[in-house]
Image (cartoon, rainbow, N blue to C red; front, side):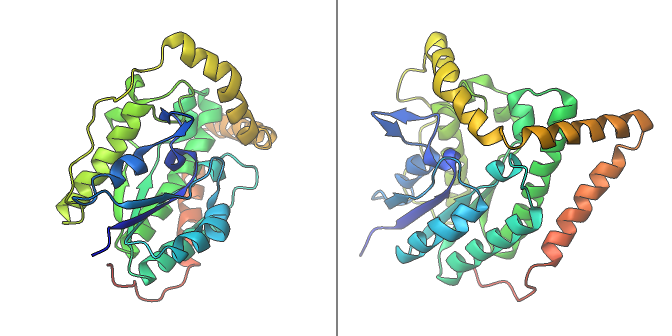
Length: 282
């Protein structure tokens, strides 16, 4: 009998950024793979730093399907919110395609909603709120599609772990080792409830010493700052415009209109998707 086959798709979160081992990254998905069954799963990590929903649908999906996994995780969307080209309808359509393809093969789908990057970076309110609306919109789409495809869905967008600095790396956008372990542990618990995880749960305790404050600051000043800059440069002019709009609505007492606009965008994105019956979950 072959081992459980687990394929992970997504961006830097699933690639493992923030959880360094030797000369690379490990991350929550690799930690989870060890406990999916009594014998560690055959694990392939296709996630790549900077990936957006388009990259997952067009590049990672074909490779993932070719492996015919028993379990497939798809966690993506934050990088989409950090682009001036953000299109919620396109994100929804690509996620729908990816989810349908894996569940159509009989794979068990793992998904997660994520904290908004503006809050994690500690941006001023007028800059953070537009990003928060975008992330809430993506999360709402992920919630709806996860339900449609019978996914094991982790609500990771809120809770104590988002404000516990011990869970996060120096850049504030990626979990550190303890945070990655927390994600793996929570996914394992959800899978165990369904009878899909029969191996040992990941340990919540760090295997390696936490980086010193000076090492964390050095990483942030060198690699970390460049990482954020590369993903946000094209967003900045638009974000300033969004912030100005935010301030105008706040001054007029009409901020609720922005929330209603976001809710309408979510409804439109989901309504545009195929209304075929939900495939049977594995």
